[in-house]
Length: 295
Image (cartoon, rainbow, N blue to C red; front, top):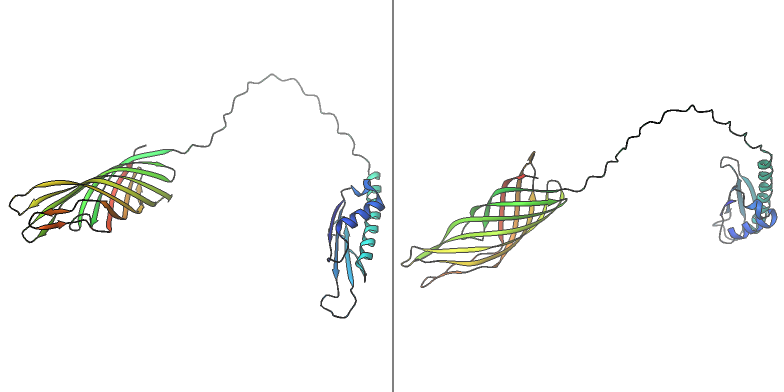
């Protein structure tokens, strides 16, 4: 018996009603697959000073059958009446099931003529494709602010490896000389660096990147009596965005925008002239180039 009992809190519980039905009909009949839906509503909700009054709607079997409707001032009486009605319906359901004749046995299958055995072919089930690793080479032109004495351009070449949404680049960049002048002379500043960049690209057109750059900042004196050249360690960190909005087969256009700061750098100083140049913060880099997917 599939029993559904929806009643107010003051009414007997579902377990109590089921136990009453079992005591009336027996455990064998109560175990039959008969659906019972009972709903008790209190009709005096919101009326002060009036005795309680309850209404029972009981459906046994089909959902489309009209419900049996009972009303009483005591919810317990409705619960007893529902248990009695359900017990009678269980007995009627058991009698109907007992009178239904069993279906006739299925006819025996027709004899099958012997056939020659056929050769079977193995069918291979296609496996899901494994994620592939892609890689290639590229080059781009860049504009830099704050690494060198003045706004300037440079270029780089790089190789890259991609796996799903993760990408790693290894590149080398050269920034041509820019002049830093003070009264009495100056210096020509050149930056050469290699960098390692890691990107996360949740979209096919681009994503976010972080870059570590290490190299040498070279200063050569100009317009002074005894010019000299020296190199200093350059270390910088940058973060930014990259986009690949256009592609032609294996070729893709790449655009980057980055902000960063120098972590270690030399200060260019000339005797008798003082400090000539010191890199600034923040570093701003913009780049645009072309890359080719080779595998």
